Length: 262
Image (cartoon, rainbow, N blue to C red; front, side, top):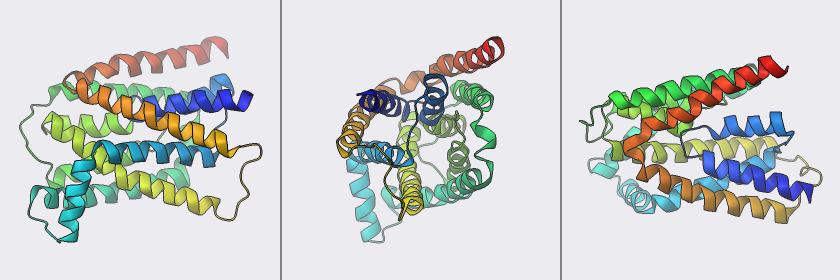
């Protein structure tokens, strides 16, 4: 029963925070640190698969149009241009993500580093209010910068959606376009992360005590809650900077708690 409760809690955290600009990885690390919960690599992959499918379903019309443009090798339509910017943005994401996961992950996994990451992420999200909503589309230069932001979000506490949408807004990209591009750009990034996880798990025995039914429950919860969180974010995208009022106090509270109760 204890494992079922852990899975429900972690699935709720993953589904709610994966797409809201408050960092799912950071919250998972907090749960592990303060609640003593542990997320096996296989379960992490299952949760990310759930949120990935939610993204594809939510943007299914855009995904369909992009795939059709790709099949036709049409790179001049709006969807064709989107293919090019997603590819361009994915390169810095891949390079930075691999560097962080290979060499720097342990450095940024301490609870204090996560707290400072929450603060930094909150500041970037708050700065998004300076954006002027003047660009209809993401150009290749903006795609590179947004891709760098997505790569940095590999660091726990730095929100992927927070950094990518905020960066797009700061660059003057219109809110609906920033929202859509951020999530479409996440699809190859999550696919890449899942592929890496599958490679690392290749030939390894399944985690002891993890039941298939519990994995299914976690998968469904992350999907349902993830879908709700995307809908919430789209509805409040005009007040996107207000999410900083959550991340900033959270970061400072973690730092205070670490020094007061250590």
